[in-house]
Image (cartoon, rainbow, N blue to C red):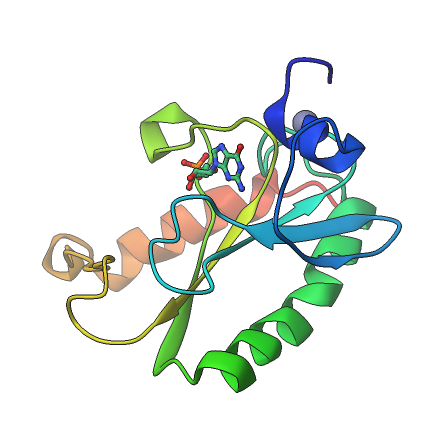
Length: 141
Ligand code: 5GP
Ligand code: ZN
């Protein structure tokens, strides 16, 4: 897409610090470097969100992620690594070209906090079965 900054990075119209590239995927450092080594992994095919991503593109994208994660791990020895993917502006997405954030974790104050608030008490087993069944019936593979 002509006005997409990540497509421009893929085409070489905008500069980037490349981490890995093959025919289908590009990985490059996120400008913000939330933590050292913060890497974005993107399909070369322009898809906006997980809702648009086709299975073949997803397969090619995720195929390279473990190797990139291991490379970050071996170079910088983080204590952990979060993989984050924001879909839609409500979920914090700012660039509408599908991307995974690989964010190595070094300590409690390293720039990212992931905390889930559990609502387990609001759902019994029957509620969970109904929710799961609704999703299951809507899955189209
Ligand atoms: P999102 O909020 O959409 O999940 O993340 C978009 C990310 O893209 C942000 O973390 C931001 O720092 C990064 N970003 C935005 N523009 C550029 C750019 O031109 N180059 C690089 N390398 N990263 C960018
Ligand atoms: Zn794009």
